[in-house]
Image 1 (cartoon, one colour):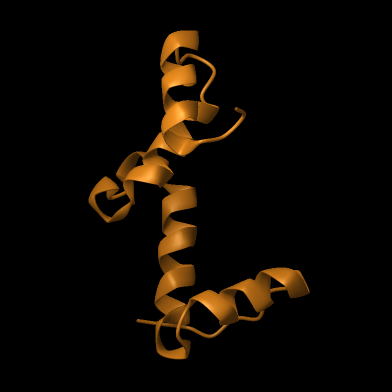
Image 2 (image 1 turned 30 degrees about the vertical axis):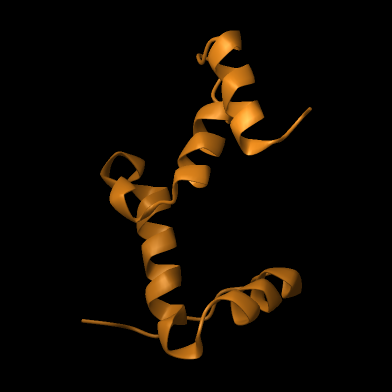
Length: 79
């Protein structure tokens, strides 16, 4: 069952959503984003791109300096 609700979002967020996600897929996109945020242990990593996964690892504190530098080189960030 689905229900319509109104939430307040920043204008820039809505503009980004409108630019990057087709109109028919926006509700599904927002639904998946909310579910992923509420249940991070249940995120389907098969739908995430490699660069996204590397960026997530790069941001984690427990990743070793060596691995962090290797990821940064792959992502070409902070060089």
